[in-house]
Amino acid sequence: MKAKPDTRATLYVVGNINVDLIMSTLHEWPKKGTEAMLESSSLRPGGSAGNCALALAALESPYRLVANQGNDQFTGWLASLFPESAPHWPTCECETSLTFGVTHPDHERTFFSNQGHIVRLSMQDVLAQIPEAALPGDWVLLCGTWLCTALYAEYPQLLATLKQRGYQVAVDSGWPPQGWNNTLREQTATWLPFCDALLLNEVETLGLADKPTLDEAARSLLANMSENAFCIAKCGPDGARLWAANLVLTQSAEPVAVVDTIGAGDSFNAGFLSALIYGLPPATALHWGVRVAGCAISSSPRRYPDWQSLFGLVEKN
Image (spheres, rainbow, N blue to C red):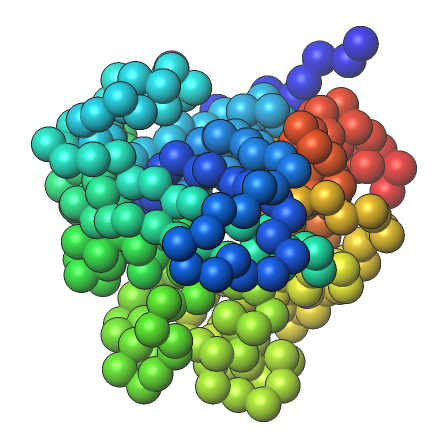
């Protein structure tokens, strides 16, 4: 077996980790006051940062999950799943953030979430867990943007500080619960110049840029980002696209039997950024992201490709 290539770089994943209780399949909404029996359930760590960290652990990529935690019966369980990261998490005297989700026959899902600890994550919490100076190739991924409400208020200052420390910064903001509006777009414009990679899905890219086509939207966002930045659009079964200065890339996805789409974009982020911390080119990163996401959504219990198979893609190319 070949040894895994070395890298001094680390990916710091900042944002929301919570408990997910997922049940399926809900064929129709029950009437009030009744009970519905579903076929299956899964209790697992979730949230954008949590999903990404699980994939990174499976890929054996160098990473640190930067987060906080509540103080209840779920606290120890979540911490036990991330033993190298959890000792650094500050504890908030509140309940753990929890999401209850139900899936539908068309593989769409509906989520119900409390607020819990994730709305208390602050810039000071984050910066205390990230080294004062980046090593060559280090990245920070910020995700769960709209759910980490205290952190979002400090985004421009946080991103500027991370850049001053020498980090490359990626953001996967997700879709805002209130929907895109001009106020949010103006707020986002204040931190885009510090962003080296924007990792949104197709609908989120169109919503943020407020443009009619994906190409126009991506180019519009890229024009406001840092020099040599990437704008990536995750396009589900159509794979993913990447825009950079004088470069447009498309990576198709292999057809898979979809089992569970929850965290697909987070799994893509893990694959994409793993390639970058190994110094691989954007085309390889795009390929890795699509491969990791495809493996994740087509398996239950969830599986990810191992690092040997991902580096095998490099050798084939």
